Amino acid sequence: ATTAETDSDESTGEAAVPASNGPAIAATDLSHAFGDVRVLDGVSLSVAPGEIVALVGPNGSGKSTLLRFLARVRAPDEGTVAVGSESGRARVGYLPQQPGFRAGFTAADTLEFYAQFVDEDVDVAGVLERVGLADAADRRVDALSGGMTRLLGLGRALVGDPAVVVLDEPASGLDPGMVERLFGIVSALADAGVAVVLSSHNLGPVERTADRVVVLDGGRFVADGDPRAVVESVGATDLQTAFGDLV
Ligand code: ADP
Ligand code: MG
Image (tube, rainbow, N blue to C red; front, side):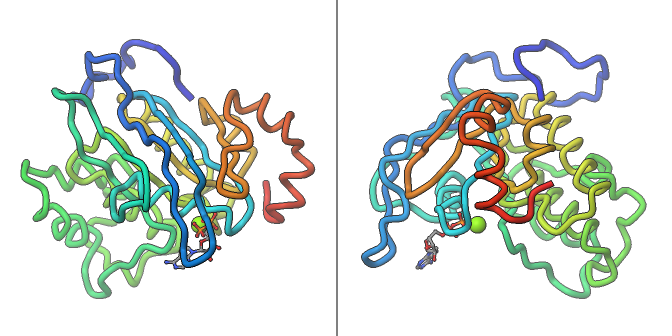
């Protein structure tokens, strides 16, 4: 996790943290219902450049719905999502909870395909490198392991060099080594100034990696703050009971 550190020591040519002090993304008063079920009830969330916010909460608490609104793949009944400042990059990268991939495409093809929808030139090899898949560029997606497929999904979210990435359960179902690898990439993104919002049941890595943890329950935020404090206040055992599959 990173806070207000200045430069990383590697000159990778990554985009610097935008000069503006405004949030990278700000959601205000989001409310949404599916039929009679109110899934979100006046939720607001601001994320700064370089900040990692982890969203936790029981199944069905509305995490994926909120993340879809942040990614702007659909709109809430009420409320607004603002991305970037006037001068900042406004792209939001998104890893859905259940991403689909085109069988028969290679890892590189997959990213090239998404690169078509981006105005700027996309350094596909650079993205593969960033997610640790440089050696798998020419492998077909159907021949990748679950962990590598997840990394490819993360890579897809990075096409176009977004200022914000939204990752829905990026660590679910991965073995502990791959979970660490994934959170390591997330940390590196934040170090490069990207604002990250992710949902996760992996409380251990979340506590180590996130700058802030938000607990969603019953459509509202019931806690929001320092990872250790939040986990303590809500009660790690309660969370474990609620979530079942914690590290
Ligand atoms: P989480 O990601 O925390 O498990 P979701 O956002 O997926 O929660 O779901 C929140 C609630 O909204 C659940 O009750 C779910 O069944 C419902 N829901 C989610 N998407 C839809 C949809 N497209 N249509 C109807 N109900 C939905
Ligand atoms: Mg979900």
